[in-house]
Length: 405
Image (cartoon, rainbow, N blue to C red; front, side, top):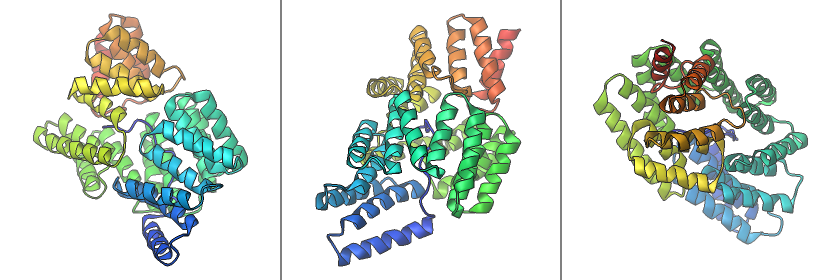
């Protein structure tokens, strides 16, 4: 499974401090079992701990704490409502997240994180004008790291990479803790990487690690740069070390893909088995991974019928550009090229400068015999980022070369 979109929520504290916060809150609730505010804080801390540790078993604990908070104090408990919205976002239950965001807004419309929940949910549901409005309200209420990061992502979605970089630099200016600094620098690194600027991406990833040497996403960023430069063995070693302690599905997939393209089939299969176990665990803890499964299935031609059903189910639930792209790629894998092209057009309707989206449309156009359109899309994909995918970048270049000749 591949992550469909960047996580917009930053760490609130570093891992060590978070563990201490959880312990302190648990002790507080032992002493004062009716402290609804501490239950709300504990629920949010559990959601954050799940992100930091890649352990989805914290989500049921978060749900229990947040629901306990709301049962103790329902009338104006915006913290618990935001927490339940944040939990729903983490579980990819975006309708539920929107409902909690709306309930929180109706309770108190002056709290900035309310609009973070609303904006994130609306983005994932593909309701972009409403999402952009909610995120602007968040910036207006409190121009800080959280609101700027979301505004940056909104610009990126609309193809304004320069604007996204400028706003993320503003976010960096508001970062105070070492983990916030590292997180923001990592976001800058990803923006540079996704636009094909490896040197600048590496620079930001290294700055992130200098700010917080325990920050795993920046280490994965450096591994991604190594792979882009053709240093496959070094990239494999880096990802293998990362997944030992932080087996996030996207890192497991990256490692599996590297094993695949270097011919280490048996080791790739081991990672696929780990990924299957992780998917089972995520679903058991209430996380919807249909979108990620659909992309993975289409990329690897694994369980294609189930992958198509997952993509179609997601499209029925939400009309985001990421779901449209996954469904297009699944339809392409099934040889349904005209339907695939319609969905690929949906994926690119915002003008997103995504090399992956353009590669998918280019391959679909080629299958339909639309060679001029295929050349255009594949050339644009490679121009944006020639290293957009370990699995597919070479295919994109080879296909474009064939079309040109």
